[in-house]
Amino acid sequence: MSVSTQQRDRVAALAKTKADEALALARSIQDPWFRCQALSIAAAQVRDARSRKSAIDDAFSAANELTAPNRLVTVPAGKRQQWADASGPPGRPRIRGGLPRAIGERQEKPQGGIES
Image 1 (cartoon, helix red, strand yellow):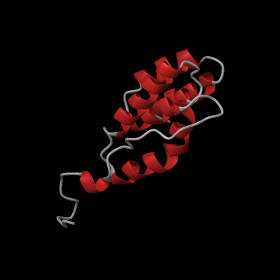
Image 2: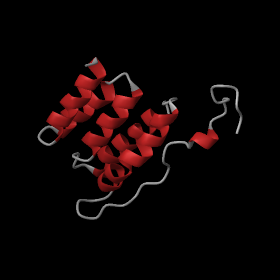
Image 3: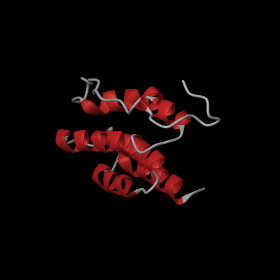
Image 4: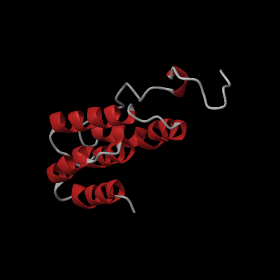
């Protein structure tokens, strides 16, 4: 298990009881894939609306660092509900705009030299 995986799992364990500590640990994760996941987990537990929004923004920033196509698709599909739940007040979630960039927006050529 990688260090980033262990850190993400630690964030998940901490988030319900020590959300601020979990958020700080999530922000320290080097790998953007695991940082995005950890920030999403922590954001869902942070009570302060400003901190929650900041965590969600940081999760989007981490997602935008991803380059693997499968992960670019997985992040919006898997985290959309967490982001919606965390972006609004408890009991009244709202969806936050600005999902990570779409694969179609990528500028580089796909592997194998085939252009779409």
